[in-house]
View 1 (tube, rainbow, N blue to C red):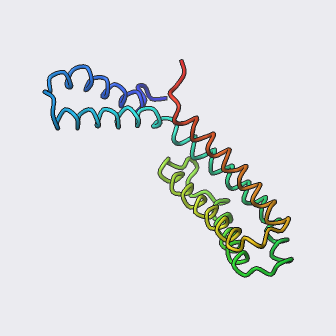
View 2 (view 1 turned 180 degrees about the vertical axis):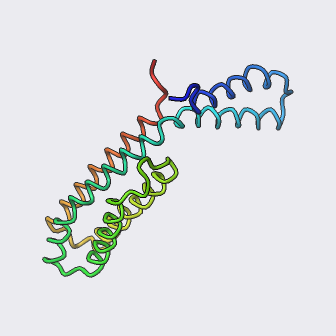
View 3 (view 1 turned 135 degrees about the vertical axis):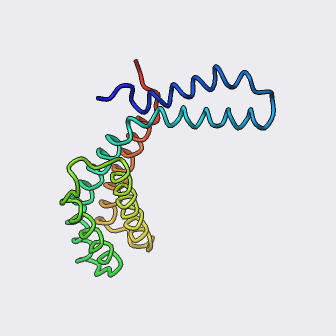
Length: 168
């Protein structure tokens, strides 16, 4: 591992600005801008080193959940002949099939982040189609909804973990 990490470097810059530069700047707009910049740098320093593992774990969980949902969704489609749900499922399969062939052995945080957005868009689209007709609260739809809600709770827990300060 490279030391200091990017997170440690950013943290050092924030401390230096706060302790050495900020005291030399008189009250006013410039001082407030420096304070805002320090806050942004501190925030980036807290998450920078965690972002790759966060996206990797989040993507793995989302993909596994969506793969597990396909049989349930197909059952609902068969029972209801829902064309919109069928279209989302086709898109879901195509997106998940692309993920099984990694373009690089160790994807960058940027690649993982782009994939995360793609997967989250699928979740949102699936939820929209599920809730488009409030009268259609079938057992299959309720099962899909429950699995998506459980996934979102896990995603929020991971996000909270990444945004929490490191514990010594």
